[in-house]
Length: 322
Image (cartoon, rainbow, N blue to C red; front, side, top):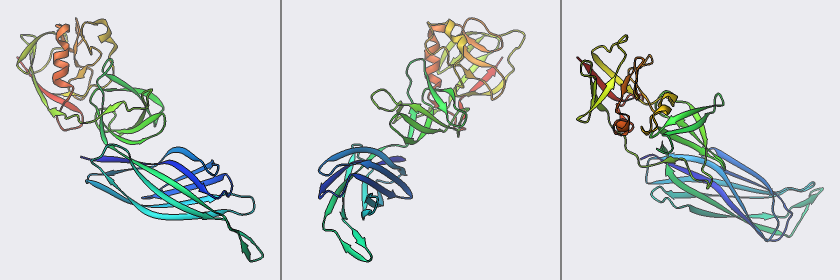
């Protein structure tokens, strides 16, 4: 399973001699660079909690070389020190893993080729690595939809439960991800973290094989997993026999709000990959395949929402018969 490893600068401890308080810290790992400019007093430890980078691996461990540079900035003299080393992260451990580096910064003073300075500061740099699943899924909560911001357009869209995403990065307030399936596949989006800073996505979801369903035109019944459901259709736009894909839900359909007894009633499944014909709960039809046993809608929803055909767009296949 693909794992995402977030490497961050956790804290900085400023020890031994004082060289000043205008500190610049640069950390480089696997082509990612973090620069932090901060006032830090000698004899203190300061929490930073800034991300250096996010990396992915499908192996049991992850190793990276790290280069750290620390500068105490001054109008006349910059005192600098650096170190390099490596970190090895166990991808099976979900608790934060810490790595401590010490950087010695020696006071440097020079005029006309003469050097002096006797002070040395020691900066203890704590890096923290946290492992999570790179592939995550939308939680099934509320009305079954999660509102996210599409980063290319700045507009809000709704993602259905169990939609697969790939987390790219996380900051203090938001989680940024690529949508891996459905009508917005390939788009980059973000969502606010929960108030406690936790993710709105979940792991360890297994999509099920495509769901197979049948619809009888003459009997007006929809059949899935051996269960029959009464439906109504639109006589002026009859269904034609054949095979159709059932799509991943696209957006909340407000018509479902009229049927509060049908949980997840705003989730409609489009039949076929074009047009406006859906499978949904309701009392009438304008061309859709409408399940009038609204209180049983959750049975159908549960049969479809986690199912996948493998084309990144469909949850199942529907055969329409006489």
